[in-house]
Length: 330
Ligand SMILES: Cc1cc2nc3c(=O)[nH]c(=O)nc-3n(C[C@H](O)[C@H](O)[C@H](O)COP(=O)(O)OP(=O)(O)OC[C@H]3O[C@@H](n4cnc5c(N)ncnc54)[C@H](O)[C@@H]3O)c2cc1C
Image (cartoon, rainbow, N blue to C red):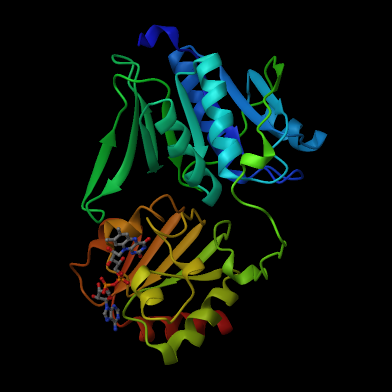
């Protein structure tokens, strides 16, 4: 295998026929910068058709090429057709890297086509760095329970495949560039798809559980008492924000998993992040450290969270919360 035979960086554009998954657009914005540094093209791989408005949004990220694929087998997401498709496309076009959003679908098919090619796949990266000396991508992610950051490369194989956690990068489109469209047809025999959609039920969507885009987050840690939760909910509401939590709060069955912030939960970037009784473990911090302003309340002056905050308050969380409520209610 000669690395020099491989060119261009691909982003898989996950969509439901109407809307592109935010992570795909976030990735296009980030990979645009890396592709520029590497002198390569940014290629968006779209399976099926997108509404014009979504194609516009995609082009605003500065993609150079849209590789549009049609064919049988892609009527709904299934790992058999998608893993086969990317194996076929990568063998034909030889991209240097393929970036896939770390969604349920992305995590399912990316390692499978990487294995078939065969090449390396890094799962759940939270940072990407292009090394000009080696021309390798460094996929960086928390490891050993968040105690260290692992830098993973695929130094001898191509393409370099990776899934990237949603919310890791920002959607900051840099504007349209001249963009060409390549049409491809790759059929997958539908009889070989091992799953069948019998019924479709939309998730009952509770907007209060969607914290990824909240401007203000009040995050409660393991020290929270169940009886005190209404206080923190009220504080979040008065600030026009939402409640979030650390992993142990979910483990105790106090709040749902969708509110967990961190490595195994959601990555958030609110304008204001207020934490109460949160120790500041790396697994949590990786999910909130890019917040605009971080305020931490902890009774332990040596708590790690104070290393990451703009304002630290040493004190009892319930007392501090009540004082804040008194001011805000006025
Ligand atoms: C693979 C892996 C993935 C993980 N993913 C995540 C993740 O996505 N998100 C996440 O949050 N965690 C995650 N964790 C767990 C993480 O390592 C920590 O255990 C967790 O973040 C600690 O949560 P905490 O700070 O709420 O609790 P604790 O560590 O128990 O800290 C509680 C804090 O509350 C303070 N406190 C106690 N009483 C009061 C009081 N009355 N007033 C004020 N302060 C008080 C204490 O001083 C302490 O600092 C993960 C762990 C692993 C191994």
